[in-house]
Length: 156
Image (cartoon, rainbow, N blue to C red; front, side, top):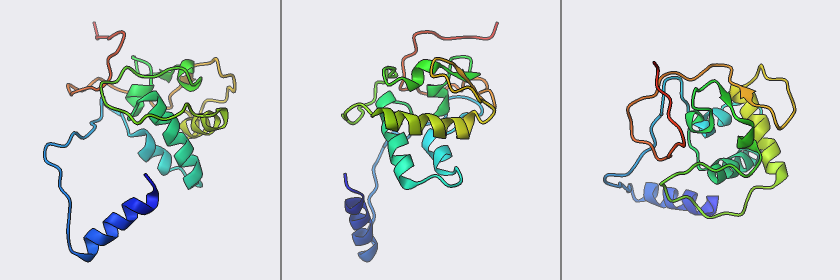
C-alpha cells in the first residue's frame, strides 16, 4: 500500500471527526523480559533514514519476526549468523505479505541497523559469526506466540 493512501484515509477521517475500530484485533506482545519491537528500536536510532527503515522492514517481514526475542537465539544471548543470510525464516502461523526476497543491499542495511541497535559492542564483520547482544534477553513470558520453535529451553 502506498504511504499516500494511508495518509489520505487518516486525513479524511480527521476531517469528518471519524474513526475506525477493530474488535478483537490481534496485537503482538513482547515475548520475554528485555524484549523489544525490532522496528520501534531501529526507528529510534540517531540519523537513520526513512529509506533505511523501509529496507530493514522488508527484511524483518521476510523473516516473519516482530520482536528481538523472535530474531535472537533461544537462550537470548546472541543473534545467530543465519538470521542475516536471506534464507532463514521463522515458522509463523500469521499471514505475512507476499514479497520478493530482499536484495543483498537490503540485508546489508538491516544487519548494520540491528548491530547498531542491539549489538553495538560487536566489531566482527564476518557474516558467518553469531552476534552477541549488548543486553541478554530474560525469562520467557507466558504469552501467546505466533512462531513455532524447533526447540524450547527451560531452566533446570
